[in-house]
Image 1: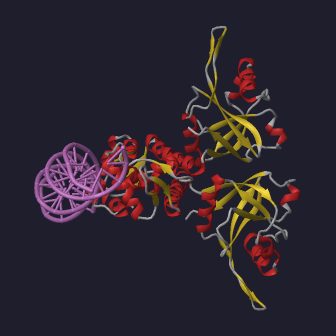
Image 2: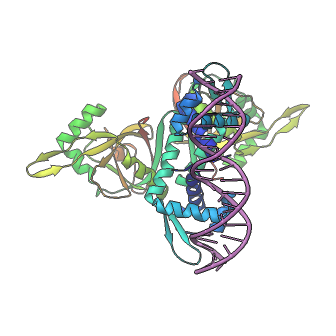
Image 3: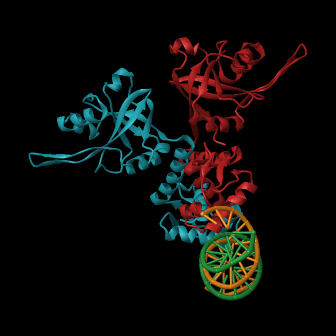
Length: 220
Length: 220
DNA sequence: ATTACTAGGAATCGAGTAC
DNA sequence: TGTACTCGATTCCTAGTAA
């Protein structure tokens, strides 16, 4: 990807194109970037071509980044974090919510909890803390799902297939825990956390409480 | 600054040029960036011109980013953080260490603590928690020092001049606290934190304990 | 070896303009 | 209004090569 394009993407994101459709003319974008209208128009078309941008036709065109576009910026952000701080530790914030998570179902299975013990050195409490993610954390979660993480291998039991589950070491209020992402889970804004303890009672969490999870990501 | 140059800078940083001198030829840099040797050579010279890079002459040249170069990357990192997460909250990590900080001296002064009360709503405990920063956090701290923060105005008392002090809202283990930076402090790797409480005893911290401080920075 | 000059070719950019 | 085309101008990149 060409640097100029990446900066155009950044500029569009900066103007609000990450969350919502923004109305912007190629002239305006050009002005923002100290480039001509024609040039900005070109950038937009190339970004559309690359499927990093969506456009709603109209008088003043409406623009919005695609997931692919967001990922491109997140990748750059993460790269820089790694370069500047030597590691990546991202914060994901959400609100405690009642289950419905698949996680509990998985963690209950001996085959999974055994693998957690092998990888993390403890047997998890057989329940998950479910967090409804803040809007601002969704992009980070999206990125996290792309990461390899630590794999708990799936298995088959009586005609039922249990898929792989990805784990990430994390902390909640300095307590070690694990973020659990079933490999074939759907696009969701719920994140599940497991721990040696019953986090809900240990931290005295109630539905709606705001929780910050710090997730560790491998340096590459 | 030209996008290509920024990416060259990023690449050099990625190869280790942030902390140490790295030996790299223009050919190698070119290969890394999918550009020709001549082009990479040009980038290097332009970055030297911009004072974002230092070079030690020799057979294989040694390169290292300057503070200005680091700041350029940090700025980009921060921009992206703001765009992607809507705010900037940086983590700075250090180890508890004994005083020598100027902070305690300042906080003891009624004129300062009164201003802290006005700005943050509490009277600080008359002592500071001093952290010797981790190497990885130094660049973040450098950046923080550049930020406006919240200003405690200095004053004059009996021929002695007390300078301005910058503050940043922060948390240590979910506890609200304030990072304090005397405006004319020297380049240092010690960061001082004040709080309503005696953090040292409340969190049972001993010299050498590792502490993560999360500092909030204004959205612009 | 490596760096950096020159010259030519390639791409990018912006003015004018059609739609 | 807007967008996006053509087409020179300019910038950027590379091959060749000198130091």
